[in-house]
Image (spheres, rainbow, N blue to C red):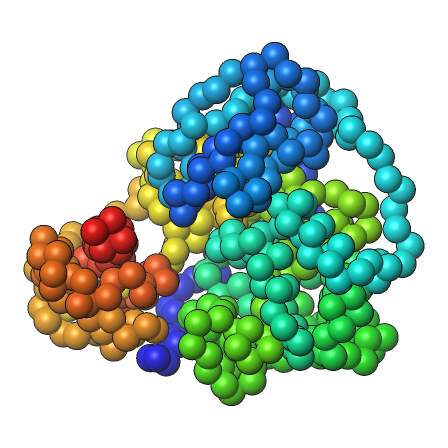
Length: 422
Ligand code: SF4
Ligand code: SF4
């Protein structure tokens, strides 16, 4: 595993101390029936049906649910763009703005008052997934046998994104309460919250309250990329490596925004239907963090955001500058994995030149791939397989470092798909 890299980028992200703007009133909600991994969902409702907020309206073949994030009528099906740039079929719900739940349960005073089995079941039925961009179902992580450590990932090493940091600044007490409850329910002896060493705001907020929780500590990790990548983070925190998943070491890792979703699930029995997205780029008078409903069409709400001033000749990136994907439209549907949206103009990329075989892409690749060889063999399936592009974590370091400005990551992702489909 190569060493993480200090990125040379300006701090253009939203200030985590600024208010998180909420925009929870979209007219129309689009619920994609396919996720970024290609997993499809069968809809359980049809045109004309009334749905309550939090109703399960579609499930995957292993019964992982998708919920309605508003109450209202299902009006049609429509194809829309998601963060990968793919166009997928969506269920369209017209919001009646009543925010009606089918059943209401009061808030729970004692968050730990759950049996382990019920907690696992609730994680699944509430549709909780990793909110750092992975969208991996969280209940699967908690199936770890005899867990001995919970690592809470608040490193947020992707430049410009500050959703997690904003959550720590604004909701630190709830986050700590949530972690404490998880430790109790799952009988995990301790938790470590990992933050970036230059994240003084989070450190200060956490240190104000952490004394009340003897089993929770804060640890700083180098402010390098990709220190927030699960494998790198586990190595930094416990100085141990794992083969497939951290569960081999008795470790569960969770992103801090996911912890907040778990807190709301435990407290209010609410499924995951909202998330924070960082909006960045020179089409905004200032970068902001905005809380939106899953299924919101950014194209509908952007004109209502006072900081948004669309310009000509924009590039649009769903996600952050390293791991994000160029997409052709602002008509982007918010999914659980969408942590940022960059809209910027007058962006002049240096022209791409031929590979000079400097080897820098291999030097930085955290999973020790040889990206320039992958590009060379993009049309040679048997050789491609041997180069293992499927191990790529899509971190974007190869493209970042390449002096020839080759969009290496895009090629490797293409190769990854080809190997998968082979
Ligand atoms: S994007 Fe993939 S190939 Fe490129 S450095 Fe990251 S892991 Fe390696
Ligand atoms: S970093 Fe760019 S120029 Fe250097 S070997 Fe890799 S692809 Fe070629």
